[in-house]
Each structure stands twice: as structure tokens, then as C-alpha cells.
Length: 272
Image (cartoon, rainbow, N blue to C red):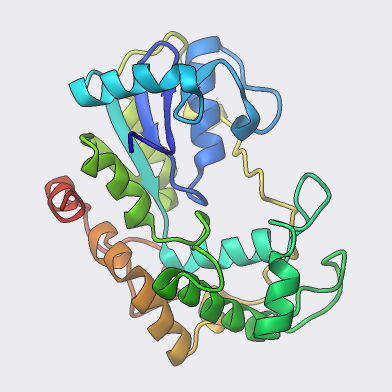
């Protein structure tokens, strides 16, 4: 199976396992900058050169050799499951993507028809009940993850532990896993552990939120979207994410972690 979702700098200074909706655009640009002294012009996900990605045939051998030898500092980044699934909803379901179309073609019409959600009209700019629509989307996300119907789960709302685990199962080991909510501290810890061709000053790095502006603004506090049933569904989907990455399931309004990530625990529980 190899190492899907893995990026590596051309200099092989660092290896990163991408977890969607967890600052991956900013991390990718930092990696690119650390090698080239400039940012990639455009969405780093579109970069076809300047860094190694598992999606490129020519990169797979180098990534495999590096990861299996643990030759470089290896890391990933995670996010509170409540805010991550909300972000996925507003970006991928309600938003118009950068190609001017809806995400995944007929996905949104299917959701409107089968789950009764509203997304603010054809352009996503109309008023709609965000809370009611999000809770219906949550049922759909649960159905895709639990029963793989009416489709396989999408990478943007499948559990973070699933993304993280493929790297471990296939022979990788993480040196650091940090939180999006404490990004500068976490990313600085990565940079302090390796040598880069170009120095990176995190206080001067912009945030490359490529999904920003795709969908409507969130109109309510995070906790308003999650009633008792919604919290139950979130826990059913993301139980392992809460436990391994130390987030607060009991309080959707608390986006911050409540403990320290134990790398040995992550390796053991996701490496089965």
C-alpha cells in the first residue's frame, strides 16, 4: 500500500503525513519554502514539482526508502474533531470550489435529495438554517464512515486516526504529532529538530487557508451546532481521534486539547 498522503521536501529534511483540514496548505508551503526560499505560487496541493508527494510515481521510491529507514524527521498535525467536521461542511458541502463547481459533482444534489440539507442555493450565498443542515450532513458523514453508503467516506471527514494509521501500519514512525490549535508551537518544534536550506520564521509565515471563502461564514458558535444526538454521532465517528489526540469530547465549545499526545500510545494503537 505504501505511504499515501505523504509529502517530503526535495532535500529530504522532513517527511509529513497530510491530514486533510489540519493546516496542510500552510505546512506544505513551509516545507516548500524551507527548500526553495520562496512559496509555491498557488495552492500547494497543485504543485507538481519542488517537493516529493506519494501521488507522484517518481517520488514513491524515495519516500518509501526514507520512511522505512526513518532517515528524516517525520510529523503530522491534527485538529479538534468538532471544528474539523464543521469546516468540512462549510468548505466542501456549502462552498463552491476553486474550479467554480460544487465538490465532487453530484455529491451535493444527492445530499439535498436524500438527506434534505440546504446549502444556500446554487451559488451558496443564500440564507439557510446552518444548524439543521449541518446536523443532517453529520448523519450522512456517519453513514459513509460506518457503512460506506451511499458512498465511501471522503478524506476530508474520515477520521484523522485513519489517515495517521496508514503511515504507521506500512512501516513509518512519527517523531512529532502536534495540534492545529497550537500551530506555531508545534511547527516550531519540528523546525527546531532539523536543518533546512532556508530559515523559516513562523511569525512571518502567512496562513495558507485555501478553503477560506469557498463557503458561507459560520453564523453560530461551534457548540450551537452540536446537540446531544450530534455529539453522540461525532463520538461514534471520532472516538479514537478524541482519545489519542487528547481533545475534549464533553465540550464542543472547547477546541483546545486537554492532555499531551503520547506518541508511543499512537504507534501502538494505530499500528495494529
